[in-house]
Length: 361
Ligand SMILES: Nc1ncnc2c1ncn2[C@@H]1O[C@H](COP(=O)(O)OP(=O)(O)OP(=O)(O)O)[C@@H](O)[C@H]1O
Image 1 (tube, rainbow, N blue to C red):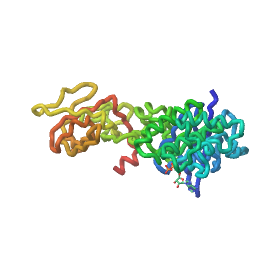
Image 2: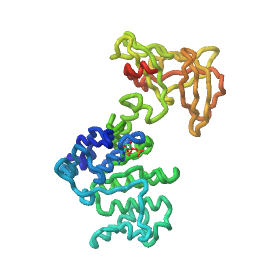
Image 3: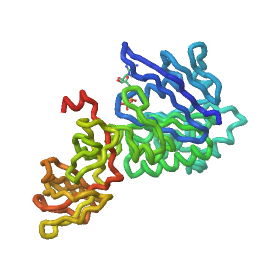
Image 4: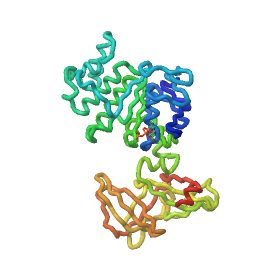
């Protein structure tokens, strides 16, 4: 299937600094792709290039297989069939809701105003003015306005960050269902991993102007390409060691690290929810198992109540390192309590350490 939107080898520098670096990406009709990455990694610049307010230094943009911007082509922003929804979306204050949604629509398309207001749950709001609406209602009007000219593609830059937490999830879900219903291809920019996981069919993880990993939320979370990618989605524990004979010593016994040369530094990464905590039974922990390895004795350093769960920091007898584990919040152990930790081996990620980083640590 021809992608609705395709970016090929987009590059952009500002004052000699490469902000978007050979970025290629495609979005299918009806698909939501998230550009996810830390502040300053080039997400908004990519959207601005697509919207036509910034010009790339090289690379091409295609819509439905036709080039709209390349070395010899530049389609004006208003002819790109691209809708925009940005964080600081501004409704026209002097126009009512119907006026805002219908702004610029040809007369024979005016029935679209009522149709879209119904879709966003604002039927009956036609005559209200922006200052009479809540933040969430304004957001829905902005969505209806952006969709009115039937854009093939919707670009959204942190569109929900102005909303308070209670509203945000509901509006995100409603927005998504309207966009899917319209079959619009969506490119959404966010620096919030939870927003990306909630909204996206596909996540493109960006760092320093490049896409470092792309895939569906499940794969990105469960098969991160490197330590930073794992750390972007949750707290992580990093167990450092040295691979010898494809094995690395850890507090939980020997861990298989095939593919790493003898003497190579490796990092075994595990999320706090995949460490299991057990009580001390007369100086013993649970029995070792192939899936969880040997239990390791630890002392509770700190435990914090986080609502649904508790975050427990434990100092390992093995080497004095501190590991974090999350447990249901009914359990809040006191500092100094002896506990035993096991590590779900199938949930570990093993990464080699680049020599420069290993030397610095
Ligand atoms: N017009 C410009 N002139 C000079 N530098 C710019 C310009 N626009 C963006 N930059 C720089 O390019 C880098 C990437 O900016 P961009 O806004 O694309 O990042 P971002 O990933 O969207 O970050 P954020 O989440 O903070 O918006 C930043 O260092 C920014 O300062």
